[in-house]
Amino acid sequence: MIPDAVLLPLIDRALAEDLEGGDLTTEATVPEHTRAVARAAARQELVVCGGEVFERVMQRVDGKLVVDRLLDDGTVAKPGDVLWTVEGAARSILMAERTALNFVQRMTGVATLTKTYVDALPTGSKTRITDTRKTTPGLRSLERHAVRSGGAHNHRDSLGSAVMIKDNHIATAGGVKMAIESARARAPHTSRIEVEVDTDAQLDEALAAGADVILLDNFPPAGIAPAVAKVAGRALIEVSGGITLERIPELASAGVDVISVGALTHSAPAADIGLDIAPLPETS
Image 1 (cartoon, rainbow, N blue to C red):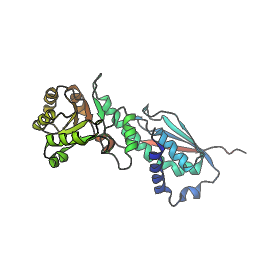
Image 2 (tube, rainbow, N blue to C red):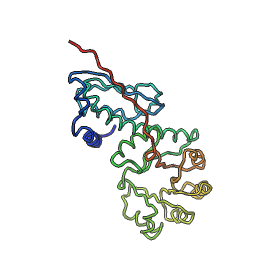
Image 3 (cartoon, helix red, strand yellow):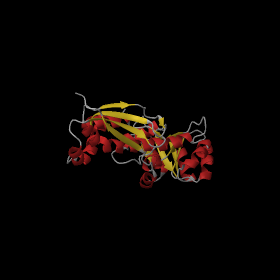
Image 4 (spheres, rainbow, N blue to C red):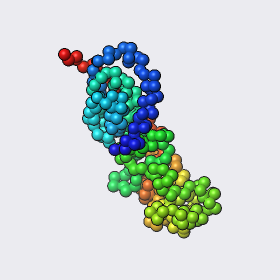
């Protein structure tokens, strides 16, 4: 569930893009009192995501629209499966259609791509697939929900939610050791200290300084297993950079704890979902 305080402002901004000048076509062609039912259906195999958002968009346009969420988020749907239906004033449905589909096609695309990465993990693997902060500006909460719907996990939500020392922090702090020591002195006692390293020398320095999590960033593939052996459980190991679907089994088998994949959000194609509408018989 996405809190209203986060979700409703996103919906209102998106609707304002489409409806600032009204809907000239709908108002000119559809009689005011026409009622209709519309069905949102999968046109490809996909992982359903965004039912709550679909409903909220519809009801933000018209609180009398009735939405039925037929399939829960995280469900695998086949082409032709109906995901959600909406019934009520035809004009209202048509005015909300594009905004609702923009949200759910994006979210479902992220969830669908995410599942392919999760499914690539070897059976019984304890390795986590996570997203990154490479999200669409303003839509992070929706894309994070989509990643979870696809079976993966979320990385830190924002810069204020975790200590993660990256290459530019190391460069300006004076080195790995100094960055870790400074972070440990200033960070809340509840925070782990994660540091990004890209060489064996930095890995040794991070271990000596007591990092809690070590991110092997763009490490050469042949260097992953030796790095895991060197760490020997003294810190959690995350791998990132240049992660492809084909590398997931290899990385998990090497014993890394976390594989963070920016592609889950920055490269997910929109899912193909169609909304077909039909007028309802008039009642006397």
